[in-house]
Amino acid sequence: MIDPFTLLVTLILAIIIIIIISKGIVVIKPWEAGIYIRLGKFVGILRPGVHWVPPFISRVDRIDLRTQVVDVPRQDVITRDNSPVTVDAIVYFRVIDPKKAYFEVTNYRQAVIALAQTTLRSVIGDMELDEILYNRAAINARLRQILDEATDKWGVRVETVEIREVEPSPRVKQAMEEQTSAERERRAAILRADGRKRAAILEAEGEKTAHILRAEGERIAAILRAEGERLATILRSQGEAQRLRILALGAASLHSHALTAMSLNTLEKMADGKATKIIIPFEVSRLIETIAAYLGKGVKEPQVKEIDIQRLFELVGRPEEVLGTIPSYEELSAEVKKALEEVKKTRLKPSELAKEAEELLKEVEEKVEK
Image (tube, rainbow, N blue to C red; front, side, top):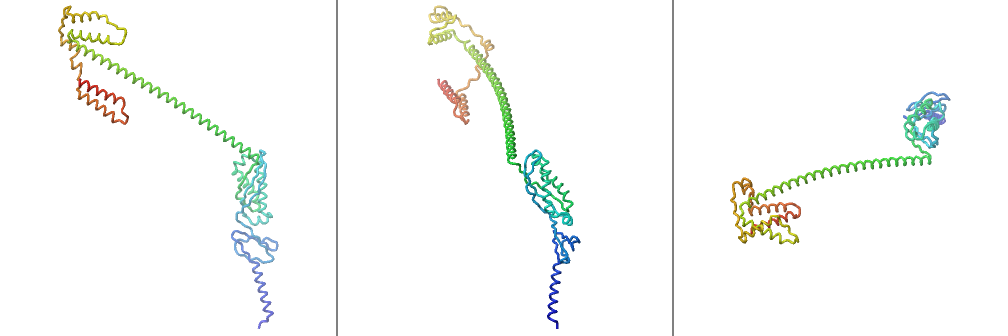
C-alpha cells in the first residue's frame, strides 16, 4: 500500500516537472524570428515553429520580420533659397538580419525614425522650393538610398520613402498663389490676343472674298447688261428695218389720192396737239399744192407710174417673207393662255407679267372683233 505522503510528494514533483517543461516551450510565429540567449550568451536564431529551451536560464526575444511603416514627424526646414517649409514623410522598412537588429542598436525602430528625421532635414535643406515641389520622386529615391546605407549595419533594409506633404509658409504660399494667378492671367491675355488676331485675319479674309465676289458679280452683271443691250439694239434695228421694208412694200402700190388723204390726216394730228408751236417741214408747200390740186382740180392730176413688181420684190422682198407668218386669233389666244397657265403653276402670287398677259389677251380679242 502506497504511503499518502509519498503519493503527495510524487504528485507535487510531477506538477513541478510539467510546469518546468511548459515554461520551456516557445512558439515562434511565421512572421517572427527568435533571439535565443542562455545564461547571457547568444545561442542562435529560432525559426518559426515550436521550440523548447531550458526555463529560468534562457531568454527568447521575438523580432517581427514583416515590412513595418513608421511616420516621420513633421519637420520645419529652411530650403536653399531661404523658403521655410514643413515636410513629413513615411518610411517602409523590414528586418533582414535579426541578430544585428537586436545586438547592433538599442531600438531599431526608434533609430530608423530619428535617422529619417535628420536625413529629411538635410536633403530638403540642400534643395530649392520649386525643386522640392516638382521633384518628389527624386527626393524619395535620395532619402531611400541614404537611409538604406545607414541602416544596413543594423540589419534593417529601407524599402521605400515617401514624402507625404510639403507645405510652404503662409506668406510663401500666398506669393505662389499670386504667381500662379499672374501666370494664368498672362496665358489668358495671350489667348485673347491670339483669338482677336485670328478673328481679324478671318474677318479680313472674309471681306477680301466678299469684295472679290462682289466685283465678279458686278463684272458678270455688266457683261450680261451689255449683252442684253446689244441683243436689244439688234432686235430694235431688225424691227425698224422690217417696219421700213413693210412701209416700202405697202407704199409702193398706193395711189396719189391715198397719199394726199394720209397727208391730211397727218396735218390734222399735228394741229390737234396742245403745243403752242408747230414745226412745219420744208416740203409742206408741195404737199399743199398737191392737196389743192386734188381738191380743186386746179392742176393736172399726176400720173401714177406703173410699178415693176418683180423689181420691187428683188429690192424689198416678197410680202410673205417681209411680213412673216401672221398668227390667227386662235393661235394668239392659245399662246397667251399657255403663258397664263405657266405663271399660275408657280408658287408665287400673280405677278405683273400675268396681268399684262391678260390685258394683252383682251387687246387681241378686241382687235380681232373689230
